[in-house]
Image (tube, rainbow, N blue to C red; front, side, top):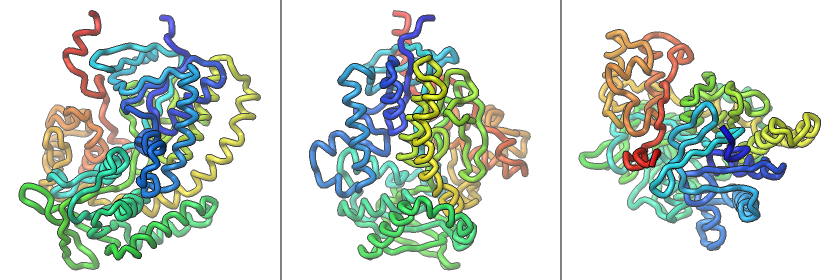
Amino acid sequence: MSADCDVAVIGAGPAGMAAAEEASAHGLRVVLLDEQPEPGGQIYRNISTNTHSGAPINDILGPDYRKGATLARRFVMACEDGRIDYRRDATVWQVDRDLTVHLSQAGGVADIHARRLIVATGAMERPVPVPGWTLPGVMAAGAAQIMLKAAQAVPDGPVAVAGAGPLLLLIARQLVDAGATVAAVLETTRASDYLAALPKLPAALRAHGYLRKGVAMRRRLRKARVPFYSGVRRLSVAGSDRAEAVRFEHRGAAREIAAATVLLHQGVVPNVQITRQLGCEHVWDEAQRCWRPALDDWCNTSLEGVAVAGDGGGIAGAEAAALAGRIAGLEAAHRLGRLSVDDRALKAAPLRRELAGHRAIRPLLDALFRPPREILDPPDAATVVCRCEEVTAGAIRDAVALGATGPNQMKAYLRCGMGPCQGRLCGLTVSEIIAAARGKPVAETGYYRIRPPIKPVTLGELAGIDA
């Protein structure tokens, strides 16, 4: 089969843009596919429009967001120069092992065959299944940030922000600066987490800029008189037809705070849908409590011709993702005969040094913001885990008692993971519940076997394939 391009890149976040630009700089024919109307991914959502408008939203989102403008500008220039074939509003729903990419765009379907594939689909928020999380008014914290970036919209009424992680504080700060009423920040991080993270602090000082940002965000929220509750337990959302309050335990006492919107967050995890569908080898990351593709030092997976760049290969942040994208682009140029081994190593050396600096903070963050057991393995039997099929934690444990040993076998009992999201929102939780119920490690329990289509595709689009 002849190739339509040398390199196909999936995802226009920092890793995808950097990978495409680097590969094209070495004379490779590059096609980049992305679902969004503008480059930037989730972290730099709407960056071109917001930057050009000069709107106050740029100051609200902060300097880290504005950094994306330079990367996006270089990428757009490469597209305008004809070096990159950028296909926006394109949804990839299947990738074959011969590196044929199937996509939907403008109501039709298309196939692209590549000599190399770089998957740069980034991260997704970890599901936070607590009682009441399916009520209207409850959403992932990142979803509120997307609304802010894309439409400069903030929730009406009091907002409670609950969970753990750097993004939790960032979103709370951004909402305050955008004029939202943040009723409280509820942190699940406990004193024991701080003690566990303390030995990681000396190494993290290499990335002291991240530490300063965290202190500054907390100071801004305290200046705005936002109440903080640390070490909260037993989170739940109360309400009849929609969210009305968030309930929790703090220092042994039951508390309730009125909230029209509840934002939940427990960190982000790699989006592994495409690499799982391809059959790439994955490993369990105990520190980050998630699966990630097994990669070598050049971002290559176990499947020949397939690389992963950015947070899709392990969480390290936007700047690290862009550096990894450049390394993946260099590897593509080398594998396709445009760069010698020595030149590849020479160009990658400064990227690796900078990348190591960004990654220095990760062990500290992983220890400090480790999700609590009650989030990974919801104790309330009535808590919905699989939102698509409305399967509860109790039903999953009952299926284990009947003999289910893993997520794929669980599908035969409960249809868990067989809804429109294809397990993206429940996969990690289902694996954790099964592992705990059987007394086995998650690494042994496994994960869903992802089948195409990995994204919804209409019958009309499928009917047009052979037309």
